[in-house]
Image (cartoon, rainbow, N blue to C red; front, side, top):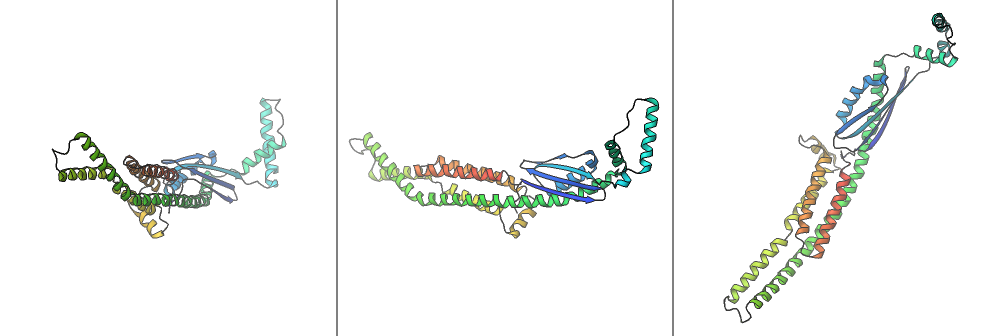
Length: 311
């Protein structure tokens, strides 16, 4: 299914050591760009987290924030007699060299005791970080799918408007072609009459009719947009395939070796649609056609902006 590149996930792991929190925020980017903000105690988990994210995500700017909280030691451990004696011994040694050293405050003693009693192997913190990563990544992926579904629906709704414009152009084309043929025929007759006011002594009526018909047909070919309309319809069918909600279609699409990123494929598709809309505008033989081409370009640009957020 289609996934957005914008989402947020948070996870937490708690144990005797304390707790570790992981926050993951992703926004759109052409490539996969992973950045970390974490304390040194959790740095051992950076590479495993990076590898896990690279396996789960294909594009997007990813910001990972990690934090931890040590478990508070019981009061009897924090102010144990042995610990206080060690502090007194160390203070005595310091005063032998620096006699004016002040006695430590209670808060400083408690903080030092906490650090001594909560010294934890970095591997434990790394394992806790990986445990917190799992719910954060699951939440992130669910959010990306929900946002992707909304973006897909928006693009499909816009595609219906594109299809409606193409149908209007097809309906309008026969009348437009006939009107242009009649206009060209009248102009050719007027030009020939001005060139030969005394009559058509150098050309017969049959030859004149054939020449007018030939010129009219050539002009009709220049303004005929049947090929452009057919290609635009084909691109709309491909759009529906790329945004398919059917699990079977989505599975075939994702399992293709050359499937690539859906977002990148959509970007290429909208470039091609825009090219056809430009050609349609250049062949416009009426004000209605010009307006249709402009409306098509606007709708295609709206879809392209939505696709920029697709993974």
